[in-house]
Amino acid sequence: MNSWDKPPTSADWDALVAEVKGATAVLCVAHVSPDGDALGSAMAAALAMRQVGIEAYVSFDEEPFRLPASLAWLPGQELLRAPSQLPPTIDVVVSFDASDLARLGSLGAVGNAAAMFAAVDHHRSYTGFGTLSLVDVTAPATAVLALELADRLEAELTTDIATCIYAGLTTDTGSFRFSGTTAKTHYLAARLHETGIAHDKIARAVFDTASFSAVKLLGIALERAKLIPAAAGGNGLVWSFLTKADRDDLGLALDSAEPVIDTLRVTAEAEVAVVLKEGDDRVWRASTRSKGLVDLGAVCSRLGGGGHRFAAGFSSNEAPEEIVESIIAAIDVSLKTA
Ligand SMILES: [Mn+2]
Image (cartoon, rainbow, N blue to C red; front, side, top):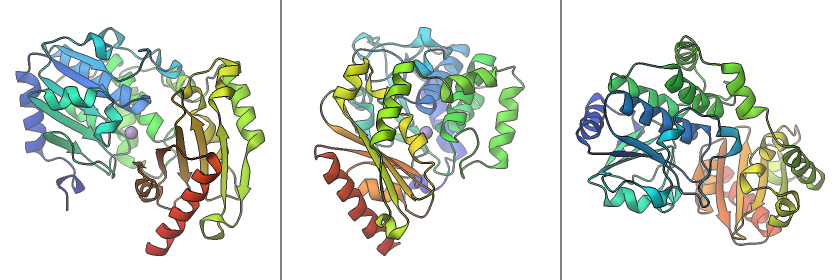
């Protein structure tokens, strides 16, 4: 049993707070291709640290260094630093929402070189990297843990901090629809609301905004979608793919393909949805979603990735058809051992 099979203890939090308060400078790191939970959590934590007098920055590994369009409005952007522009004084690194070191890209090495390297996360697939683990697999978002850190730093919950936390919470709960959402999640959301956040604008930015090019890209993916009724124990698998050329024609970056899975996964005839996205490096990224019957965290771990039961992913150099065959085979193994 790993120590993160249980939520962090008060002693764990005290250790993190002590390290952060004693730091010369803290770097809060989000995972590569950051989503609302990773970036919202890192930004909220850094804003809280700044408020109580700690020098804090936010970074993630991306070249060129820019925010995804859906998160370009997040407060706290003055704290962002590209990996090549990090202050030399950083001695404490805290990662947010990254289950393994590879998810931090080049910043994993910065963490390993720091005097203290803490991981704040909620993935069951968390590998145990870092010198201090603040991991709660029952938390519906890492943002819940980022808020706990802000509270334990005795930072006031400002509208800016609450906005960052809410961005993470609404991202990972799918607007409070996914099964990880509890009464506690709603109480927490109510607390965020009370600070005067523009929850409607946050929801629109996170879920309901895409460029016309991105809408066209979605059309390509849907046109190409295939349903395999026999897959996943006869419960069906729907999949599609987007090439680098598809994106290049529309002038789009890889993150533009992120929302495709959310439309594909509504397919009633499929327990599992898969979207394969070819990166600029020609490596395919597989995003997978299930309705609960199949543990995709386990399936994707088997294929070299990881994630949650309902949402997981991995990378592959195989051709799209081969990747889908690998997924179907791994699902069969998972259903047999479940
Ligand atoms: Mn998350």
